[in-house]
Length: 107
Length: 114
Image (cartoon, rainbow over all chains, first blue to last red; front, side, top):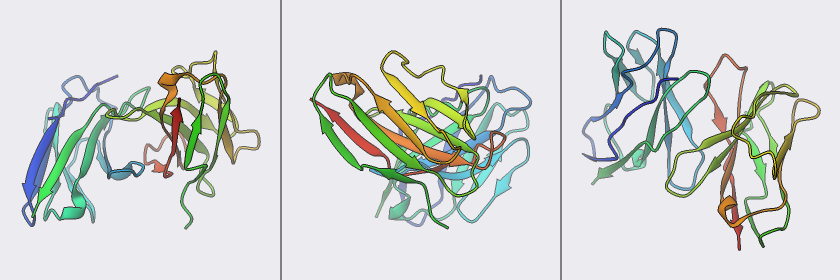
């Protein structure tokens, strides 16, 4: 199962785009990349997922490199409510959250 | 659409006591998960059910933890006897089926073992 590597923490100014990177260099061809976030004291929340192509929904965009070894989650206009821990997960036999990236949106 | 319900929200017990958590998934969701989240860590999968059958319980400490989903809907997770290191938030999640990793999480139960 592919494991992911994310920076421990990041800051982003309110209103700017937040770009959260994820490395999944051992991902196999049939494994998806999923992103979740967890706001303090709440359960994780699904954001977006993808396999090969870039994806966009009302919450975020997911950019996956052509070799699929890394991806970037983009929150186009970060707000204070986007402050959370963001988890990048490569699916496989087990759904492994890791420790994620703690994003702080600064006013 | 009602979300995943969990109870209780908080529980404090002494070590060696037993405790049970309850989860009601989103209606129609066949797959149910229990996670343990220790402070400062990401959620760790304990057990996954598809309807009333176990799909994965490889990380469940079976000497003290048990879980069931008898009618394929509600589920209970039990710890007996509890240890100090069991202090954590226990999260329940559900998804349409095992092919979807789009999981919906409940608010969790915060367990403190003293």
